[in-house]
Image 1 (cartoon, rainbow, N blue to C red):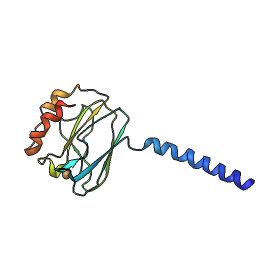
Image 2 (image 1 turned 180 degrees about the horizontal axis):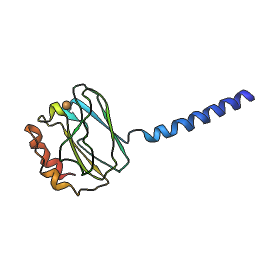
Image 3 (image 1 turned 90 degrees about the vertical axis):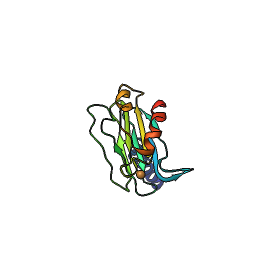
Image 4 (image 1 turned 60 degrees about the vertical axis):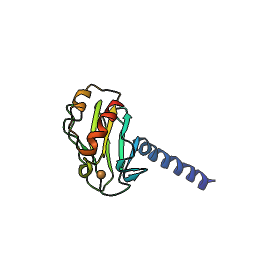
Length: 147
Ligand SMILES: [Cu+2]
């Protein structure tokens, strides 16, 4: 009997310690990929919409990618962000607005993405004014229209 109650208590303690970790887990996961259907060098989701306080997790499913916020492509007061190559990355969004990012080595190959926080599009003009390169330049206007 005593042993059972010990097990019960252990389960309770484990649950209490694990639940906050689960709550802190990434709210959105985006994979960084060499290939997705007919596209190459892509984020599995090009646009995600989150709430402030949410964490986006970029999984390095295939190597050779990263996440770099584009200069001028995120709300004022936000620090620049550039993740390490080949590594999973995560970022907790706390300031509302649009965030534009690209993969540093593939920024001209269409590997771009956007995060909209709290549905706030007050920096849309700045996003529209961003300079994209190569294939990304072709993709960006359509994506920006979908924000
Ligand atoms: Cu890449």
